[in-house]
Length: 202
Image 1 (cartoon, rainbow, N blue to C red):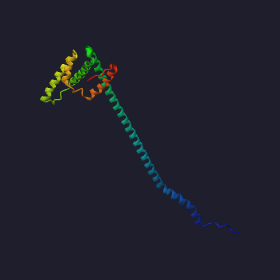
Image 2: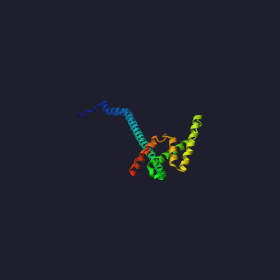
Image 3: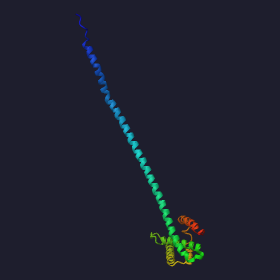
Image 4: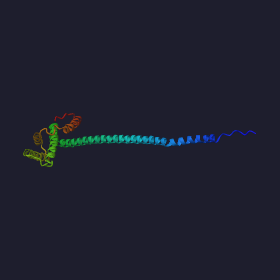
């Protein structure tokens, strides 16, 4: 009886060791693969974090810029409103004073309006705090300003067109040539012309 041929011991060992070597090879390579994956993950994470920070920074900058624009627009609108309010109050007072001379109302209105504006501006300078830097020349000027302010206040208490005209002449166009006055005046003359059909001459 012939028995089937059985492989040698070395053949069986070789067959078993072949898968083992493959598994061992894979296991040996895993740390390298894991290190590579970890590096890629860290790079992706850093890139995502950087993009997120840039997006937040851009959004914050855009928001700050928008807020700055709103603040600027608000301040401009506020300044314009205050200027118009001041002009309206001056116009009402000038109209009241000019009503004493209805025959020459338009010119009387102009004189009264300029007078009150000049009086307030001179008063602001006279009321300014002393800086300690005055020379003899500036002290002389301050005395003149104070005298002019007192004179303007006295006219304001008991208004007279002729005295107001003198006051305006003494002050000159130091204030009425300023942009703020000219801007308010433009609005005033437009409204006045539409209302009375008469053009004011300043």
